[in-house]
Amino acid sequence: MAEVLVYVDHVDGAVRKPTLELLTLARRIGGPVAVALGNGAAETVGALAEHGAVKVLTHEAAEYADYLVVPKVDALQAAYEAVSAGGSPAAVLVPSSAEGKEIAARLALRIGSGIITDAVDLEAGDEGPVATQSVFAASFTTKSRVSKGTPVITVKPNSAAVEAAPAAGAVEALAVSFSAQATGTKVTGRTARESTGRPELTEAAIVVSGGRGVNGAENFAIIEALADSLGAAVGASRAAVDAGWYPHTNQVGQTGKSVSPQLYIANGISGAIQHRAGMQTSKTIVAVNKDAEAPIFDLVDYGVVGDLFDVVPQLTAEINTLEG
Image 1: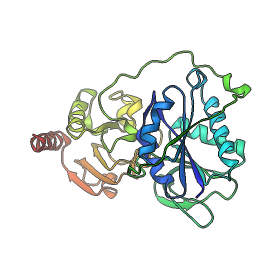
Image 2: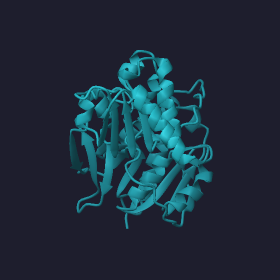
Image 3: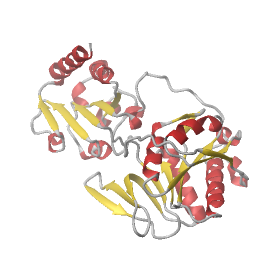
C-alpha cells in the first residue's frame, strides 16, 4: 500500500480537527504518514496514531516558530524525499488554510507536481486520487486528479467526519536541512487573539451568521446568544462587517472565510453571491429573513419568513429549554 503524507496542523502538541479529517481521507488511498513539526510535535503522536497514522515523522526546531512558511516547506520536502526512497507517496495532504495552501503550492513547485486546492472530498482512482471541488461560487461540483508527479491536495475543513482507526503510529525523527530562504522572513511579534470560548469559524460544526438585517452591532448579541445555545461559531456577512458591526475575522464569503459546517443558520442575510460562495457547501442551511423574495431562500434546506428579532430569540429559548 502506498503511503500518504499528511501535514499535521497542531498547537503545541494539540492536533487540530482538520488534520484528523485528513487522516480519515488518507486511509481511502493509502497508509497515512503524518508529518508533525515544531514545538510539541512529539505530543501529537497519540492522537495521530488513534486516528490512523501508521507512521509519524517528527522534527522540532525554533525555525518553525521564528520564521514564516519556508521552514515548514523544507521539512515537508524532506519528508517527501524520505518516503520516496521506498516508492512515491500516493499524495500529500494539507489542511486548506491560508498557510496550508501556501505550503502546498511551494511544495508542489519544488517537487514538480500538480496541485489541487480546496477539495471537499477524496477517493481512490485507477490513475491516482480523485478530488472533488466546489467551484464557481459553489455553482458546480468537479472531480479532478493530478496528472503529473505526486498529487499535492489541500482539503477544506469539515469535508469528512473524523473516524478513529487505531494504527501503529511508529515514530521516526525526520532529518531536515533548512534552505537559505528559510530565514528570509522573520516573525517579529505575536498577539494572542482574544478568546470568545466559541469554536474556530472555519472548523465549527455549526455556524450562526448575521447580516444587514441585524441592523447594528448591539443587536449581534441576539446572534451570539443563539450560537452559544448551539455551541456554534458566529459569522457575519460582508455588509455587517463593512458597517463595523462585527470583526472582519468573522466574515463569511468570497472575500472572507469559507465554511462548510453541518448546519449553517443565516439571519438577516439576503444571500448575495459573494456570501453564498463562502457557505454554499454547508450540509444543512437554514435562513431567517422577513423578505420572502430574498435570494437566500433559493439555497436553503429550511427557511423561515419572519423578523429575526422575533424568530431568533424564540429559537434560542426553545433550544435552552430542551437542553435544560
